[in-house]
Image 1 (tube, one colour):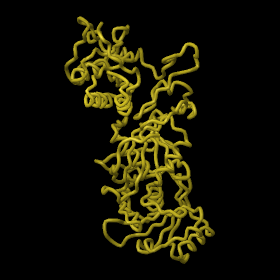
Image 2 (spheres, rainbow, N blue to C red; image 1 turned 90 degrees about the vertical axis):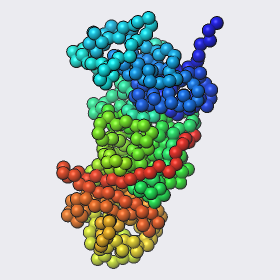
Image 3 (cartoon, rainbow, N blue to C red; image 1 turned 180 degrees about the horizontal axis):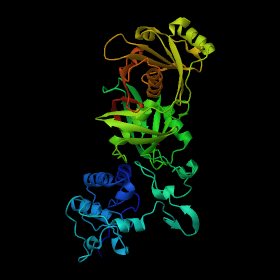
Image 4 (cartoon, one colour; image 1 turned 90 degrees about the horizontal axis):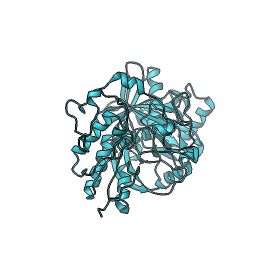
Length: 460
């Protein structure tokens, strides 16, 4: 009797999945699906992982059309350890989106790899218009439970269409509850990294823990893990719910969740890209508590479009008096002040010089719950301003959200040029550098370098 190799169906979507299968010796063949895995690059990584372990690879199919079949064939032809027959649905289809002359034909059980520019295929636009749809209904139905849909999530990219089909709202978001997505969670290995943000030199910026697969973790579990890291913030990357987003992120401090924060935004994006994330357009679009945040790329430097301030305008004199007492300064030392609330409820004051900012020794007991940003101009050098961020008994090494709101305030009032660099973290022995730019449309961009210091897996 001819032995039949065993593979796990619909279980090989991320490199973490493949590594877990190999470690557990759970299959003799790796069976990735480029559609579910997030594209050919993710499938290539799965095949390379299998090759390193000496395990053959083949491909799972899901009713693909001509372009997908061509991509499968090119992938198979260029992958040394993909020598088993590929699963295929092409022969079951009654139509395709490629011209009739290019529809695949069997020849003794084989397809011919198409040649020519691109994948060697062209597009029949009339056929595409005839069969195009923007929703998927009754995908993978369970007959005894007609209201149930299989929920597939993956590490990188957008939530699959079958997850969005149920409960979709008018603005393109998914109304499916988090508790539904978290059903059946057990601790497992997840891709993880710790990055240093707003620096190109490791350990001189602001560290961030990033769990690159936060699916099925509850809010309580995310909070517990964040507190355990003992870092200022940790983030959890999830499939996007909004159609325009590339991924979703939840941001936690040791005491709670934030709708937005700057260095977690850049750090999470850096980690997502390094893990193989592919944005839909020229910019990366992050989904978080404040909505969609656009992130631009210039070489290895990332910059986010500053979200609008939820509150602006002058601070109350009563609060200014508390701030002065907490900092040990006179009221006339503050030459300007403003609310800078874009999620974290920052208040900000401006002093006459960077030296005055660096000399402060805040009294946390007097400051209380006030989250305070302090800025002062440098008299020369490569940095225009020195920034400090004080909250409770802590001082943040480098703060993207605060610098974003300060830039909107200062540039908007003509107190800063359209482009400048701010330094932060100096009193803590750090050398954070925040790059601020206002573009031709008046939008503020907050950028910085990020480096990876630790990478591997965590069990959560």
